[in-house]
Length: 595
Picture 1 (cartoon, helix red, strand yellow):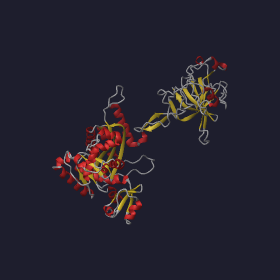
Picture 2 (cartoon, rainbow, N blue to C red; picture 1 turned 180 degrees about the vertical axis):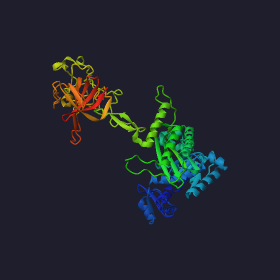
Picture 3 (tube, helix red, strand yellow; picture 1 turned 135 degrees about the vertical axis):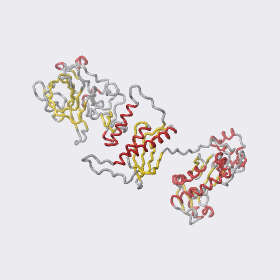
């Protein structure tokens, strides 16, 4: 069954722009007429005419530009009206659609009563004139709709046989067929299929099948999406939290059962409420997993609790508290805004998933609902040169995306090291050429050193492989450029082991050598003397038994206001602890603490 609205671009212009379709109207595309009204057709306007010729035939002609998007938007109510009569509509183009005729014919008692019902319902619902044609295929039904015919089953080839070849909608092919003496679709269908394919190609054989009444594909019906939202209207407004919580649980179970019936699960929930005074409330809850019936019920209950109680803000918070609804909730609606296919969930063997994790997630989500999303955060590792830059705190439930890209080739928790930089664990780890004065070991090309007696010494930092300002300096990068191995994405970043505690604000410190003089680092990264003692804040001095560094960093040197240049040291203390020290502007500070 083919439903056709004649002159639809003209009708769409009237619906959208208010152009009267009863007047002479022509829709033009690329300077030629593609559709015209009945009044324009009476004045001699035809499809394919040029703009100037059309206006010369009808001086009062109203010209409208062709807009496929406008035609599609205006045709949507017609599709909805057809779907109210028969399900499974396939949109051919704006202004034409097709449906399977068997179901409506059985329901309305025949094909002709079904066609009349469709035309009548479209006219009553949309005030649009339409014509219906029925045949064995979409192509034949479309041609039958031009005259409103119902072709009996099996007679479609005979119906098409007397039509001219121009009905194929292929002007070039039709012109060639006429010059070859083939004037009707019956003549074209009588030709051998192999000869048609050899002479006219693939498009020609498709047209040959259409002329014979055989469509090249079956009808692809449009299935309307299911309505997954659940709504409940209450006789008495809900003003108490306990009553609202009970109602929310029932509605949440209905939504979960509806989703389960379609094999779906919800990840984002929209809660809508309407009070007795007409006030509309709206809130969206997001979940990083699948919302169970209990999880949906909890979120609805929390949201109703927040709406009905409207607790005030904390002392000192800016702004006034949100106003409480002026009346109880009369209607509640749950809409699954984000759904996905539910393929099941396998519980973990060591607690990755299960009841314990669900309880923790519900508790944390509850805290966020009371104190705000930023009240519960989780760390996300990423890239960076300092430990503080390598961790980003994101609200619980949000997407865990690092602020800076890390090294995907590195093992989890460990940065990738170039092949040219060894992990130094004492003097025996270095080659003979690397030994310097007083038994020191050059841990990296950037003049770094490790004390000879440091048993738990740190690995070398990553030099700059591209000769940048950060990392081991330009001279160090020049010597390491010939080394083989992967290029780290963050030159100058500290290697493992990573500190256990990263201080939110650096603590001031004092680093002295064995003679009691402050330890300094020159512009050429030369340490004045090995560090012997460190004093953090006002605490007592602690001896240093091992150290590695300096690891220089010169960041954002092109922006003087944001530039930061410092040298970092990893030290092992006499009490068994470890510190990450930084020297910047002649002042020492503690950035992180090692276990």
